[in-house]
Length: 290
Image (cartoon, rainbow, N blue to C red; front, side, top):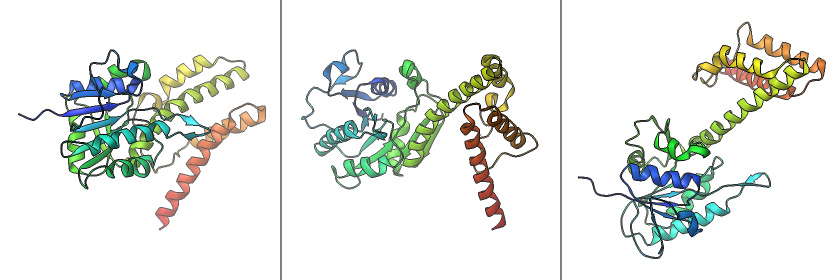
């Protein structure tokens, strides 16, 4: 029989609360801490009321906000949470602990901020680090975390880290992707921005339709049913390959020029699509020549 695993969740916002539920579901004994004691109300996890008591955590999960301030990610709440985590590690009564961060981090943050902060607090080799992004939807985060489509772990490459993190999702049966820190951080941002891109694209289509005395929603409905990129999730996801063929390049250029001629908005969206494709095509050509 495996020993009981103990987890501490730092931050009891939307993701933190959902994380306590999923860890309990996977057999962890879960405690939670938040600088706002009222945030712990209604949690199934045990509130950490005396952080100064020495105890061992197998897993510490940081789930604090990382707001954008003046165009950059503010690290204040994260740094405070890492300070708290470092104190927990310094007084840990056990051996190996994994510190996993679920906050949305710009690429490079785990390596530059999280790793130095936590590894300095424990003997060498006693701390593992993981970036564990959440892809849960805010309004139903608990349900999404208990039934995830996938799990992503950006790890330090340690076998112990990977083994423990897999236990966090062992009963889900979902696909697990173990990647580098920066890949996991970029995947989180890219997933959110893909949603934003799709919303913006169809709003652009609506503006074009209105300018042409049409209706945007019928056009959007047709595109959603007809375009392979809408009904085939794998379409277009093989990286490093530009689009070509008889239709895509000419149709992009044709609509782009017509929008310019009519003075319609959002031409920069199509220009960006064309420019990215041209850059990928040029890089591919160089690689083939080389």
